[in-house]
Amino acid sequence: MRAQCQKCGKDYEPKRRGGKFCSVSCRVVQHQLVKKGQAWSNPPNGDERYLADKLVAVGRSATEALAQVEGMPAAEAFSRLRALVQGWAGVANNSIIEKVQYNEQQEMNAQATRMKRIKVSK
Image (cartoon, rainbow, N blue to C red; front, side, top):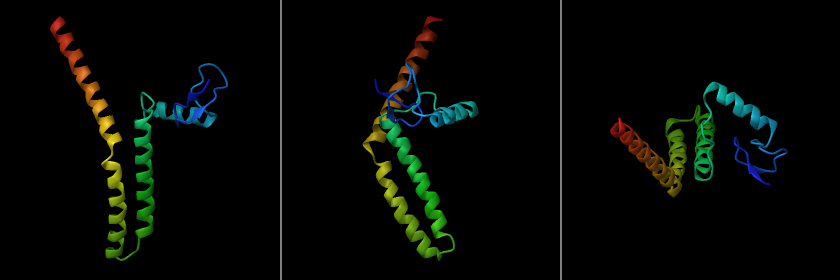
């Protein structure tokens, strides 16, 4: 039986029934994040994981780009950074983002409906 790691999302074969993580490192890192309050309450999957991975990649490329342009003439540095930001635009105009936003809106609408029902019943 295949399962998906709740930390990294990788498909793996659990060593025991109910296994949640593909490795000890994923289990330990997730536990540390939960203790710090930095873990997602529901592990992302599918589109959300794809989007999260893209955002991590954007952050990594920004850090690398800033290190590369340090000490360059301003015009050249701005040119390189502009090209990097234009590449990120493909992430911003993505149907997956729209789908995630739609799902979030549906969840918020459902929550609002539940709150109205609670108020009416009181």
